[in-house]
Length: 83
Image (cartoon, rainbow, N blue to C red; front, side, top):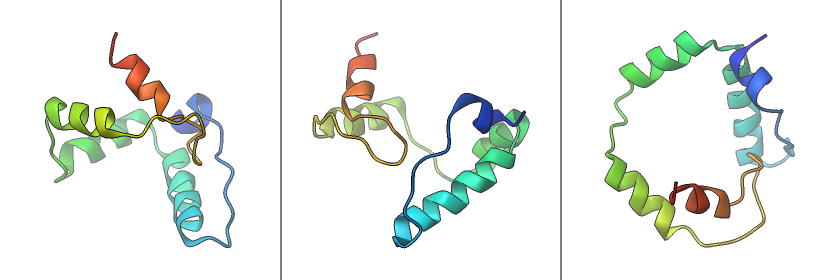
């Protein structure tokens, strides 16, 4: 089994919406990747940020129960920050 497909279910997307179409194609690529591929991509990425920057982004998120294509509510990351 592929790494992403075994951990997460495919998001619901509307292929008539540009961002949903992009998310769908990204999901397709990620579902083909293995853990080593993902770790290599992260290591080689030029996207670098600190844990403080992540903390600031999460705490600045609006609290809401609805979720996007990732099926994760904004409340979930805020709740997990306390652990």
